[in-house]
Image (tube, rainbow, N blue to C red; front, side, top):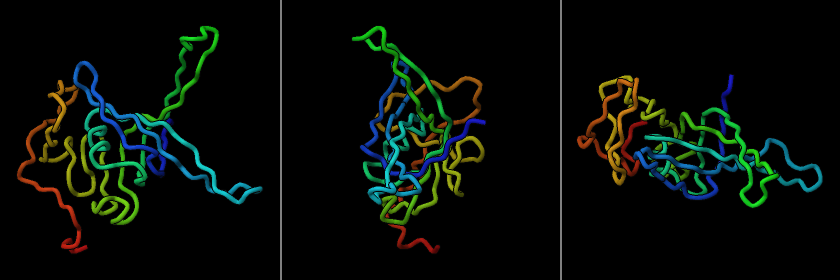
Length: 175
């Protein structure tokens, strides 16, 4: 089983990119504190984990997360290697988390007023709100991205959520 769950802070604003075929991707780094402090200095050290998200998950991350925000990431670990262009005898090895799900973490101030428990899973909120594959809701259209080709072997439908509005404050929410 290859499963990774991380909770940490974004080290920079995520940048949304598009492949030539119009598929959205987002690479970002999460700083994850280690459980124990350094015995000599007493300081907690952090690991910096590279992550990659695709399609609607990438768009969601780039829209709702920014540098310093807490994020929970669920995905799988992928390794790779490449040869250095300047030194053909040097091979670099990479380790990345390919993101399946993300969640807001922390209180209202940490998540930009979005609560703290919504999650985004391959195109859908799973906390009683939105899941493109399992209920009648449809995915929101991409704002600045060109239309994406529908993935093969996937029966998800995409459409317009203009009847819904974004809640900027949860002061009126009864829970």
